[in-house]
Amino acid sequence: MPERTCIGCRAVAKASDLVRVTVEGDLVRVAFATGRGAWLHPTRDCVTSAVEKKAFARAFRRAVRVPDVRELFGSVEEAHDNDRKRIRT
Image (cartoon, rainbow, N blue to C red):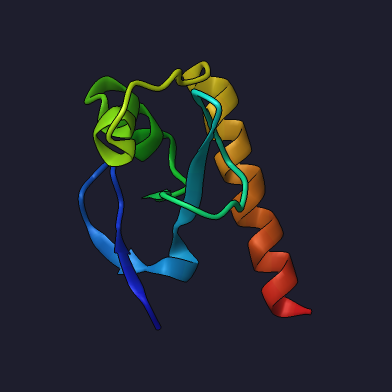
């Protein structure tokens, strides 16, 4: 199982335990897309930490706009739940 590093807490975890985020234009999105991506635990602490540390700009190596933390966390949580459902079926 591939491992990735969460940009919020910097812990290494299985990719299946994380959510991949990408950039569309200059806005961070939770969506599968080709190209550079960043990985986050689906927790409020990791999302908040990544925003506060400006980890998205470092991960994507460019300036990006990050949605409101609540909106971004909701998207991360939803994507993680959908991945879990897809794996079970």
